[in-house]
Structure formats: C-alpha cells, structure tokens
Image (cartoon, rainbow, N blue to C red; front, side):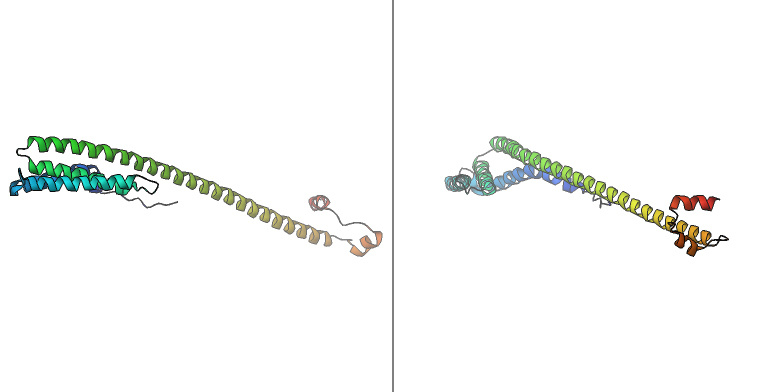
Length: 204
C-alpha cells in the first residue's frame, strides 16, 4: 500500500507548544497597557474585573456539575476566570514584580493543563496508529492468502489442461496403430485403457 507522506511545517509543530506562553504573555501585555491608560489603583476597574472573574468562575462551576456537565465549557470558563483575575491584578498594581510573578504562575499552570491534554492526545494517536497498522497487516495477510489460492487454482487448471492434451494425444496415437480395431474391442467387451496403461503404451 502506498501512503502519502506529509511533512509537517516546523511552525505547525512549535505553535501548540508555544500557545500557553503566548496566551499568558498577551494578557500581561494588555493588562500593562491598561495600567498605563489609567487602570492603576482604580477601584472601579478592579471591582469590574473581580465581578467578571467571579462570574466566569461561577459559570465554570455550573457547567462542571451534574450529569449534563460539559468539560470543554467548564475548562473554558475557568480559564477565562483566571485570565480576568490575572489581568485585573496586573492592571491595578504598580510595578512589574507582582504581575511578572503572576505571569510565571499562570504560565506554569497553563503548561501543566496543556501537558495533560498533550499526553491524552499522544496516547490516542498512538492507539490509532497501532490499530491502523494492525488492520493494514491483516489486509496484507488476506491479500497474500488470496494470491496463493489464485495461483494454486491457475496451476491446477494448467495441469488439467496438460492432462487432457496428453490423453487426447495418446488416444490419437493408439487409433493410428496398425491393427487397431475399436469395433473388435467393443464386441469383446474390453474396457477402455486407463491413463496409466495409455502412458505405457505410448512409451512402447
């Protein structure tokens, strides 16, 4: 079986690994821009981000409980809550020490959650590759068996044709012998010669 080989671009390989760091860095940069535009020590802005973070956390809690809980929605809501809380603190505080500390913690948590997803995705991909390889080997075995069976049938048909040709040649040769009288054989009640005797007669 010929399979198309697709080489992945290096950006497609690096992008998923860099996504958590890019996300937290983007939040930090936007929060510091917001800080420079007047969010520093603004009680109203801090209260707004707190309310939004709590609302997103509550949405994630409601989405994760019960039989109809959706893990994707819950994870998205919790990630949004964390991002809002991080942005609120980074935008409200003065200086970079606390925002950078929160950025490091948020990046570590993001990579911890992403690593779990990457392991699950890798296990599923390996299981799919093993299943595909097993199916491919099974189909190849069936094809080899069918090829051998077809070859055996062809050889059997060739042997039958060769036998029929040899038998016809032997009968013609016997009929051409001097003194051969098929009517006399019929009157005497003699059976037809089997294949072994025909071979001996041809050899004589």
